[in-house]
Length: 141
Image (cartoon, rainbow, N blue to C red; front, side, top):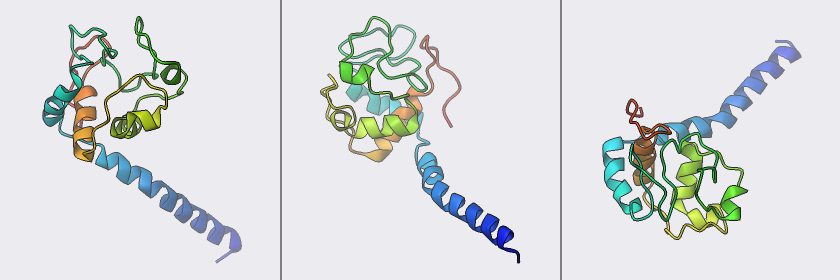
């Protein structure tokens, strides 16, 4: 086998090895939206989601998946959240929901986090069902 071929095979193998943690993490983030709705009750003292959702102590969470952190109109975010550079996806939401004050130091969010990984995954699946207007789209898979 030529050196160039061995190099390509080795490079592909290295890339697959490096990507494996990401693909397994993505698989872990598929959740049960019905259970997520139940878990979300813990969040409802500050947040709302759905057609009638409005900002409260925390921002409305319609369309949160895919949204830039600190970007809901008419909500007074901390500078830390506005400047975090986070775009909310399953991985960043999972990390944030585990320990909000560690992930965004200086956030106004006082909730200590959801310690159970499955609860976080299920809440993310529940939230992912809502578009920016609060309409429920197809259930997250």
